[in-house]
Length: 303
Image (cartoon, rainbow, N blue to C red; front, side, top):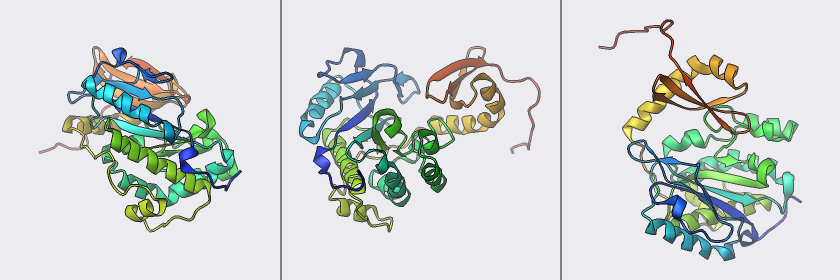
């Protein structure tokens, strides 16, 4: 039932640890831990690298497991770079679905402060779109998963404060943190997210001035020590600009191939372009498409 006071240390949580390098297929896992070998990040050249490491749902008292697994990762030479994120899932079981609307309200008030506190790299915003008032109002009128989807690309159903996760696995997912394999940084991030969710669950009024340090103080969370921002390479930014240009052109084809689908990425390949489309369930579908030989418009000549 919402609101109700729950000790943040008694909330179950999970964490998705994205990394590059290492030998993920050979990493010795603690019981219940999962290595998602199909989840790759990008190294400095743009090649697929690393993986995503996840524990079973755990309590704060079990956090030593994180130290063990992060030490094993780093011993293999794994690390987090600009392409990696750190996603924290916090269980909403103590409050149930009643907590989703308050969480959306809290996101509208505090998501900018959380982004600043976590030093979210700006190029990662595409993976962490903000909750909107329209989304909140849709959910209030029709409380279902589809109401908290944020149309866009490439992961519209996963906002920076992702309440859609309640309908999948009973959590809220906070995705704003940059990647890290450093135990202290990972732990600080988890603590902040646990305290934030516990505060929303208790119906606590938090400072809404947009000052991240005031928010941290009100939560009793660390004011610093989070994963540092890392700039994306120039080639990646250029690639994103090219994709943004191509997506409107390809949109009719995307909808023909996968109705309701969204473009995940567009990459050059032999014979044309490799077009990856996510369906409404988040499953990727890949197609090789050939650009048209006619139909392009020259807007102006660049000097």
